[in-house]
Image (cartoon, rainbow, N blue to C red; front, side):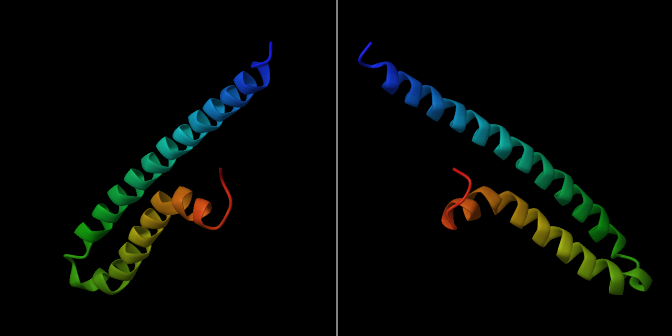
Length: 82
């Protein structure tokens, strides 16, 4: 039974990795949704009347998608999230 704490620690590490992987999958799915929305907005920019509104909005959506995808890395850099 001497290695019981090591087994518990390993189980905690595996559980944390699995949670991180699931969170990453969710963030990637959200990024894909945002990128699809960006594509729709960019398609609308072909109309010059709406391009003054849509182009900045599309840029904002793209930036949010990139930030969402980078959130786990940023959290690790700044000392949070695992």
